[in-house]
Amino acid sequence: MDRKTLWCMLTAVAVAVSATSCSPSRPASDGPAEPPADVVAAAATSEANIPPGDRNPEVTEPGLDILIIFRSSDGTSLERVTSFAESVDEQIIVDKLIEYGVLEEGTDILSFEITEEGNSTAESVTESSGPMGGGAATRIGHLDLSTLPETADENEEQILLNCIAGSFMENFALDGLELSVNGEMYSDSPLTMDMKYKNVSEE
Image 1 (tube, rainbow, N blue to C red):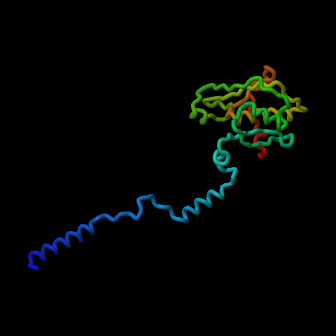
Image 2 (image 1 turned 60 degrees about the horizontal axis):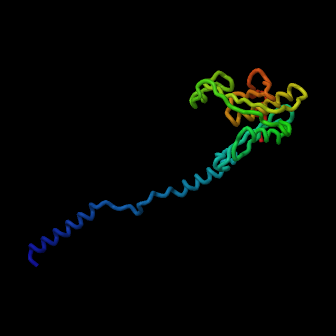
Image 3 (image 1 turned 180 degrees about the horizontal axis):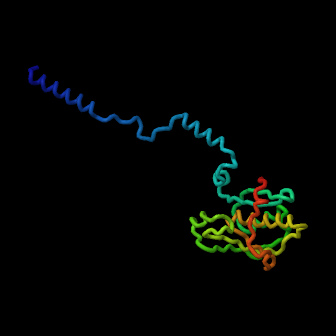
């Protein structure tokens, strides 16, 4: 083998080695990297430790709406009962109030509607200073029932009115409830939740 041929072979080998060393290495897998095992375990433990009542109801009860009803717990305070329903409307609220003994069996809804006064944008509702507190938007429910139970004293009457007003206000995000009985206004101004009774206990 002459010197020229040997030189050509050495040059070719050097070029091949250089090209190989400059090529970018390929990752072992084109898929996304798996998170470390300890991270996965920590996430699973965190989810398991969340109390059922604190989880998103849409996750624990898919396709159902939250239903909130107030009833008398001991004749002097209110009890807030939370459950789920396929849909929440005025009829199911009244049905539950009858079931819990707030309203009498056979009580009918003669009419129900919601009116809004002022700026009704979501931002304005958020900035409202509370029920009937002069916020930018005011949502008032207008409920006409066929009858109301007789009450023994003023405290029992307030419990009754707070149960009705609270149940409608919570479920329809109202600022107040204008209550009528057989077309006659029950009070001069819309009912609101009295903080003396609100959220005393919860089931």
